Length: 216
Ligand SMILES: [Zn+2]
Image (cartoon, rainbow, N blue to C red; front, top):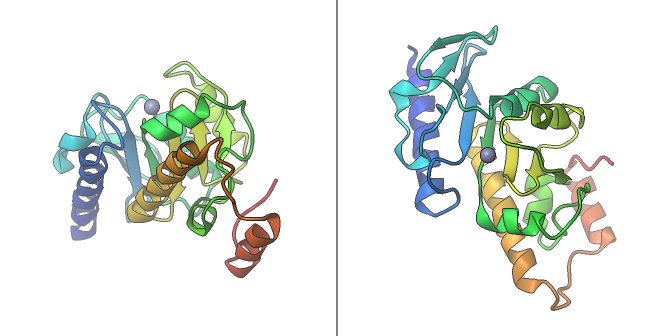
């Protein structure tokens, strides 16, 4: 195993533990994956807690997608594959059962603007976030729904379930999913109080200045 892969295994488990320690996902919920330097994947095993991932037991796939070592991967693997297959820039994918995001998903119907533009960072780190419908756990239709977006979103929210975010690497994906949860929390905190969100022109300035993905 290369030194880079060892570092990646450690990083993946350290960041997962940090998310767990701060209550961003609980019990054995959440899953995380990352591209290895040789084009394969490391994936958190099924039934494991983000608080106790073992770098040596991560599920390892080769570049052809064959499981070659480690424990069995998460049952939500189709979600991860859907992002890697549709977004060439995806180097990591994280999925959480984070409380405020799930709460906010219960208050709206599926749409392409799950988060209101309250702060510039959510716009910059996430772009538009699509709220997908509810799917039964393990339903392959979840992965199909992500594929249906044709790579136009780096972040989606599964109704009554949790967010899924792809990033260029593990750190970027974790930072972005934390931004999603924090924005969902802000949205709930200010709901009904008439918050001043960013205007369409302010969002437009961010999109053009930072060359953000903002497709319909
Ligand atoms: Zn889940």
